[in-house]
Image (cartoon, rainbow, N blue to C red; front, side, top):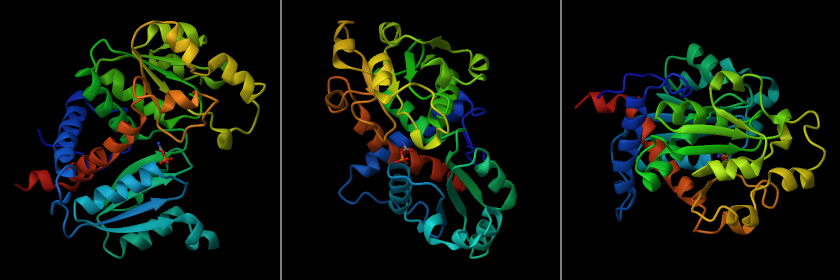
Length: 310
Ligand code: CP
């Protein structure tokens, strides 16, 4: 199957066949990453810009590493040290960078829709590395690769996303991707952190974390995004932890295996007990990070069109 997309802006309209192709391609890149010299010449001659208007550790480094592993030339842009500080717009910034002959742009931006907008401003390929509350497609893809490695397939698997759903692009991309792949999805949060649009997602909605844990095979735990909250959605972080925190005591009550995922960064002791995050019996959090490089290699490769030229 060919991957006939120019951009990856979200997972809402990406088919099961396309997601499977990305996951299979990432698996073959994982084999490359295990080699003594983990590098292939696949994107030699391509130039990729990482345009980050928001802070990032995992996404930024794994895109950069993926580009280097594929032998692309990379440029890294931080809004805080660029002419954005002098008032330059996103459109002008991107068009000026593209004038230097760039093939692909990876963008993270605080505004929902920034990646879509950019895809209409420039001729090159755009990859959404997280746009406001909207989508974070490569995060959901690396989450799905991690799930597939542990459970082999998605059909009938019960995945509960617990935490700040309202402000979460990770939740949206995972809901779209996991449902497309046949998983059952639930969300669990205080009512104030569940958006009105959740009704349209056709997911189970829980407000009780113990019921959620009893239902789920996988808990995808999200942090409370205090930096995006202009108002108080719950009385205090301690109260949030008491009612919605994933604790060892809660998990041990169900007396069966359950898998814990988290996209990071973790607010240890708030949404998740610190020792659970590091407990290999439950947690696949660092596997998610490892898989991020292979997924981003797969996405860059498939969008570059190199898979069609052989
Ligand atoms: N999961 C994720 O997007 O992490 P960063 O913000 O560190 O990139």
